[in-house]
Figure 1 (cartoon, rainbow, N blue to C red):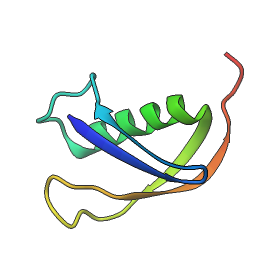
Figure 2: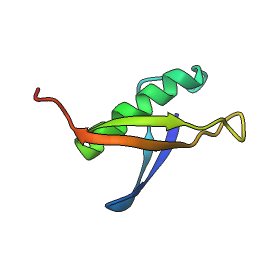
Figure 3: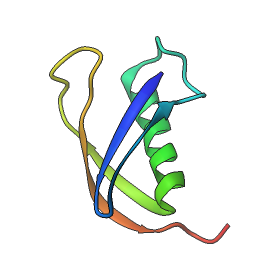
Length: 72
């Protein structure tokens, strides 16, 4: 599943492929995988509000809370 994440602060774009879920997976499974990948990239815990899809294979979301990840 190909993904693109746009960061506004600090600005930047991350794009690539989610290795875990298959392309035919349910949207909620893909959303969880995307949030996990974004947390890895930012080293922050993220709370995400997903918006209703405008297209069946497209999703947008807003990060509502960001904070440090708990110690490993």
